[in-house]
Amino acid sequence: MATGRTHRPATRSRGIPEATVARLPLYLRALTALSERSVPTVSSEELAAAAGVNSAKLRKDFSYLGSYGTRGVGYDVEYLVYQISRELGLTQDWPVVIVGIGNLGAALANYGGFASRGFRVAALIDADPAMAGKPVAGIAVQHTDELEKIITDNGVSIGVIATPAGAAQQVCDRLVAAGVTSILNFAPTVLSVPEGVDVRKVDLSIELQILAFHEQRKAGEEASSQDAAQPATTPVRPAPADDSDRKGPDGDVPAVMPA
Amino acid sequence: MATGRTHRPATRSRGIPEATVARLPLYLRALTALSERSVPTVSSEELAAAAGVNSAKLRKDFSYLGSYGTRGVGYDVEYLVYQISRELGLTQDWPVVIVGIGNLGAALANYGGFASRGFRVAALIDADPAMAGKPVAGIAVQHTDELEKIITDNGVSIGVIATPAGAAQQVCDRLVAAGVTSILNFAPTVLSVPEGVDVRKVDLSIELQILAFHEQRKAGEEASSQDAAQPATTPVRPAPADDSDRKGPDGDVPAVMPA
DNA sequence: CCATCTTTGTGCACGCGTTCACAAAGACAT
DNA sequence: ATGTCTTTGTGAACGCGTGCACAAAGATGG
Image (cartoon, rainbow over all chains, first blue to last red; front, side, top):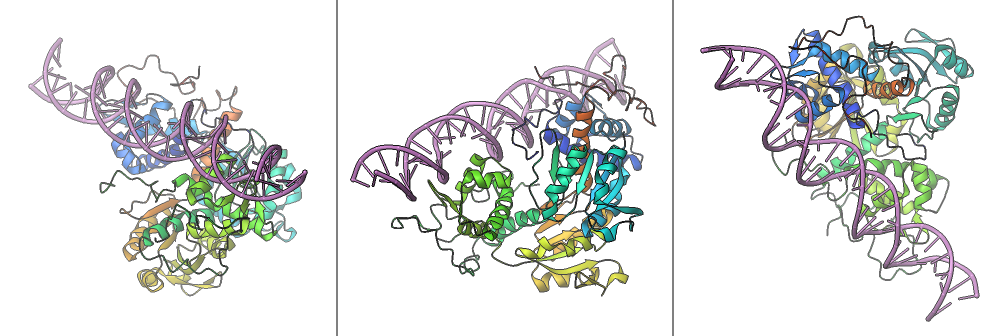
């Protein structure tokens, strides 16, 4: 996923497919809920329903971890919680730093799900000197100048970037230089990192745009013609030397455009 | 389930693959930046680098939209911005409601990227009566009781859920019943919705757990054995008939072993 | 101990997505 | 015009992920 250049297999994570890894937290959450209700065992069918996936997929996912089920019975909830936690590395403590304590950064710092499972907010960092010392979520914000020291002193390997887009790459570079090897990026920018550093991005506006696409498709089966027909700026084609037999702006793939 | 048609095409959105749709916002962002710098044209190679993807992939993605490039030159930036915007449905206005104005909800309401491109925060809704009338990001929070009326009056089709997990499904149901057909879910829960409703989820702790997995792998190439060996609760196996030679909690290298 | 029933674990096939590699198309110089 | 050079658009191959369908494994009852 890293925006680096080389194309890593990315899926050869010790034999466990990336798609499976992405679902393990989902299973873990469902299992934890069952555990709190003292449910001793669960079948793949039940657990799959709770996690919102196909039961065959769930069984195949678990098969990558080992044979932890009992045929005819199902899976032992507690045991599975432990196994998945261990596989995800949640049995150890992960100190995390959040850089950029604006609205979003503060919300993340206050987010309960953070500290709940293995993750601990080691520090909050912001570039604004006025923020320094101010407590957010019970933790005093520190200035960006301290970044390198904080990372090394606390052995932080996971960083969260919640800065404006303009500062993200610079912050990223400093985090990586200081030893961070996993980054969760909330800034709307593509981060480029060296090989071996993982980057995952959470991008609000991208998600909304994807929804808008499907929404338009759903609504625009027969009534979307006038909306996009007259934009502010006329969609003039770049005028390619010869404009005679162009297929037209809509080309051969009319997509949503009415015939 | 999707028993209606051919088992959930999901990707047959009129010829444009889902994976491509997910990248269009990325291209659009890079193109917008170029546009602001008054760059007239851009090659697939340059744009791909800016978006952090492979150039062949980018060209193929664009080919689904039509033939908008000029061989030997590249793509006209302005024209492409328009085409992608139109394809994503960003040439029209999308009123959005945010339900759950806690730390996260408030941060989302303040998020600039929201209103910037086609999306408009039509209302903020919270279940806490004390919040009602209080302005957040310049908009007065309204009580949950008004939810249905707000949706229908404003013609809202996109809803953002930023409530606690416990309330998410209920809120979701009400949104859908009121006419919302696209939901962006920030609550750590699996939402179940009827056919025809799109749900995208943004889950902080899942992203962190995925990072932790890779982090553990990177760090644990030779030192991960003792960490998980002594958990608080001993990972007792559910005691199957035979417990002889289990691979053990840290006997990794399970199933698939690369040749 | 045997028969039956439940549920796991997985072989297999299929389809989507990615990438390579190259022919087609157009710009540009002569 | 013609040739050369650049860059697009895409055919084809390959690999990953998904879901079906079933045999193996174990529980349970007689």
